[in-house]
Image 1: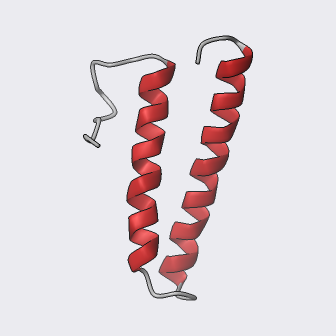
Image 2: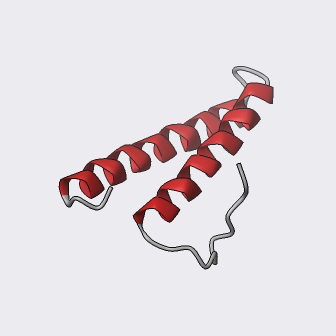
Length: 68
């Protein structure tokens, strides 16, 4: 999966969803490599949960609006 910069020329709901999914994948890899129960692990795990929440809410809203 290619990395989209935030200032990417692509825009719209799908571009944002792709961006969030890339960040999720990156943080998941980081979490997989972190020492469990360390402060870094807890921080990355928290970021991962927040990104998943953002993605879920965004997808729900976009589907409700008929944009995805």
